[in-house]
Length: 627
Image 1 (cartoon, rainbow, N blue to C red):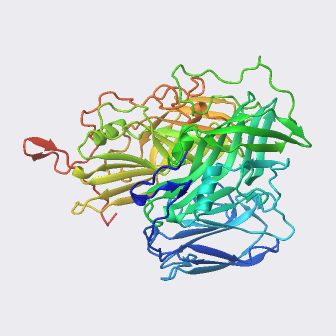
Image 2: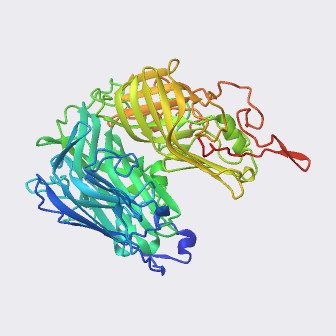
Image 3: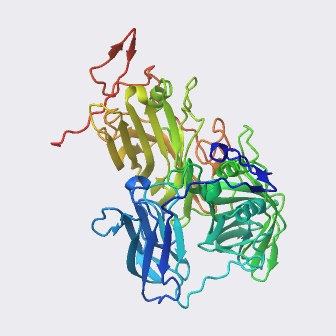
């Protein structure tokens, strides 16, 4: 299939023999570039490196600056709350303290000593097992314009060849040949890093143009998972592809000749490099449905050839609509340590019961994982939070005039608990997984991604709730979130911006907890507002909010329905298991005001008469300066 037309940004461009005509684009005076000297031959005991940057516009990223981190490619490397890196610094204009100064011409420089091994929070990180890199990125933003990764090589510490096309442990897979052709023949760039390398013997042909480094695997009776590390970044600035990155592919092998390929996908497209129109923060997506050949034993490795791969619906969306659901992707080869063993017998079940509601062909199957798949402190690598904040508030905004409710940065507006007859989408929210510190089913901390924005111009406000974090211990917990309120000019009080504020209290006494197959599901968590000031006194302390459901999973697990809590009837996609996904109650008090604005909302002067009707005027009250 040829690439879709690029819309207004590329109006008039035509595809000729698979190559798009390049339109003229004004030169960007700031083009970010990072160099690390030296980057190889480093003394493992300690070596000084100099990191230099050019082309970093001090006014870009809303002036928030840029992050610099050194260490392994952990999941939280771009996260504002990321921790346990060997080096972590902020680069910005007007730097203070340990921040790195950014000059007006867009240049900066930082010298630091790095080692091949360090200890943080009781964990030893070693370049022998997790290659180290210098990471630079936009601070506190999903925009990938300024992202770069520069590997560090220490003397005597090699970077093992990830394998395929040979039979060593690793993955050989090239995403899609026509996509590579389009990028490379049109003048774009392709940059493998962090464990992904270009196979020089087959740089642009199927099936093995990229090698992905082996990470971990589980395997039992012909079924299992295999995870790989590395990323491949594509840019084609002439066609406003500022970044498209595929990273850390994971294979789920069902044992019946089928499988799923999940990867982290992130991108920024259209608009300008510093203000792209379409942005996706790097996050997991079930990218491809696989047809697999019979596993073979080759030396000490299990080798599974990918006979064919097709893009899922979610994968097509994560590919920004460049290709459609069902389009063919590259074949490839999966290899990992182990013994192929006998194929599973037909008498052994391969899936859990599913809902009677039909699911799309692209949904993740509800296959069980190997008996070896267990949720542990080290294996907790996926999950989600299903929480709609407060249904009456969603109703209030969604039924207003000229209003909007939007989700970004890794949160999905579902059809669960949606309100009929609304303009903006009004269902509950499924917040994407960021990281977790898991000890047990009764003690864990999970950070989630995403931001939901409620805009009500006629009532002079735009309210955002983002990045919820759930902390649970001994049957109770706290919910933290970023809360931001913007008001229009002339509003009687300034805006509110409180990141990571303690927003609500959690009560798990009546929650239903289910464990099994590497998955923990906690549904029916009661949530009450614990901080009225943080929420601009829209509601009072103790106000009952929507109940929540938390799902955590090991890296080897298949989350129910491919999406976590609430999948099944009304979820919009996927098939669910009633055993793993108990129902979530959202309206503990059915006596809701028809406006959705309840008595806790502070209204200036009550109700203001406008013509023959009543207009609710929402006013923000902030703590006085004396507090």
